[in-house]
Image (cartoon, rainbow, N blue to C red; front, side, top):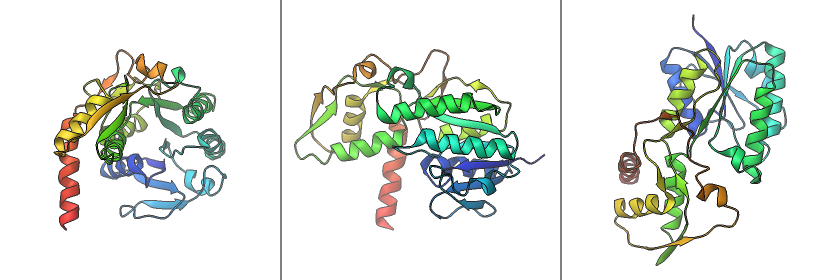
Length: 261
């Protein structure tokens, strides 16, 4: 039986990958987002605002699962609460919620505090649910490396940040597998194939882009938990296969092709 799945934030970086995989799996797909953007043929687009509680009801109607990819630097808890209320009124869809590895160790950070509260809302929703905590995306590491490389001589890089970033495309595939399966509660964390540091990731970026910068590790206030490994996945985590180096090669080739087109 073909499932109908709603993707919130389905026009964002993670959401686009999720939508593409759902379409490939033969699902009926609803996308809920604030701004109209291109979506694949056959995808039903719903314009709405989760934080304001607007436009949610039509999007959740008749769906069997929801993959909640929408996120923002502010208001995630309220947005999740509004989604849960609308979903519960519509039925009992399986709610799949991507979250962040280690957030319970960094709850003093504003964005992280919101994400942790959103998890609690999902857990207490009364809906069947799955939460997948993932590490930082390669895309995020790439964009931050680009910004750091703009410093003309020396680049200040967070010191002691132990990380194990992951390819967002593989996370999208995992979310779809979870959504089309039975509710799992807290699923095993997901991370990339190898642990590294912000310093080493940035140095790899410089090498791949043939740039030379003096790398200056800088201690970030309030980052003790991160330096102690809070951003690393728990034992027994799901390991993706794409490496940082493979991602860099593909991304740089894509950017070069786009610039020459």
